[in-house]
Image (cartoon, rainbow, N blue to C red; front, side, top):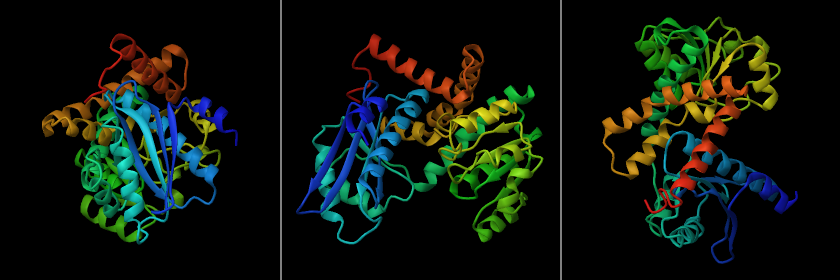
Length: 352
């Protein structure tokens, strides 16, 4: 890969390569955009087979978080950290603490958070070297993400059906993990018809028993007569093979990168299916994390997360007016906010 041209394409402020022979540290720290405030950098631990793969992934994650944080209305910049190692491997303390010292050296301008699956010991080791670690529990993350998606669905329904009564629609939810479970429960509480599938049959059965949702095999979830298809698990599930099978009028879920590529977005648009960009509708946990750092009350966080309805409405309206696909419209709105705020107050949010 071409190092500097790749960096230019992604628009990063900096990418730091960290190595430490004594501790075995091998890490990448990407800071994409700090104009709105401290760079939030989710930590991913993974044993990449090729350095180029690790590099591309950290750049992608950092740029994606910039857009998500800006569109969600936070005063956070976007970043990402990759620790090239096996998750949960023994004797990782020295490497993680060396990474923590690097973070501490940024004086609060770089804040580490976790990604799903980040080992608790890793976060504890980091916290012994830096105060700049901000996390939610797995349950909190799932709760706020599901709540945000629930509110975002209202904007999707208004766009597709002309009303925002969640209970009058039906839903095919792919994924019964922590977020999917909570979304199914909220949907069922409105009286909506909900189908659910998951690779873990026992988890699906437990959710069905407690909510009255209907279980379907994973391979059939695309073929149901649901109003809304909700991808809440794997990435890349919507592609040239699965999109033609959809009977839904809306695609709105919490999975990151549910669309395989840009062609997938075009296929949805060609079929008249309303698509909620993942980074727009799944930002509830990011909003909660941002406000928690500022000491906001639960009620204040709930109010802010509920505004994802209005965020999606703005995305759809801008897409219509500018003749853009929804994801492109969401990106445009995110970058417009960054540019406008930075021009007006160059240090906005930076010292929070």
